[in-house]
Structures are given as structure tokens and as C-alpha cells.
Image (cartoon, helix red, strand yellow):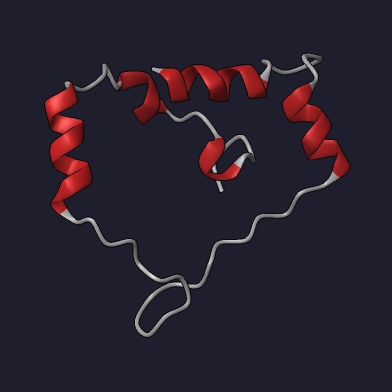
Length: 79
């Protein structure tokens, strides 16, 4: 889990350093291996499961105390 307890949705120092990619780079990466691995298949990791509590949901949706996590995740996705 990330240092902020949000798992892969968390924001890390590595994320801060990312400055974007060209469309051609993204396209090449997407089509370099078109097959999705089968979670839990032979020699594959199990499907990841993360603990979700009412407190963690509220912390991600409500803008009190910490930075607004849902908005931050949306901005990372759009970027």
C-alpha cells in the first residue's frame, strides 16, 4: 500500500516527477503486449484485494482534513 494508505490510488514522489507522454509512446506501449494476464492463473499473481472501510471511503470523498483524494485521483487520470 502507498505511504498515504490509499494503495495504488495514492500519490507518490515518482508521480510528482512525471511530466507526461506523447500519444505515440502510449500507443506503442498499449499495443506492445495486447494480452491481459489472467489474475490467479498459473504462474500469475492473485487478483489484488484492498480493505475498504467507511472511514477510507469518506476520507477519499470528503474534503476535510486531508487533500481531496477523489479530485487528486481524477486529476492524475486526466493528466
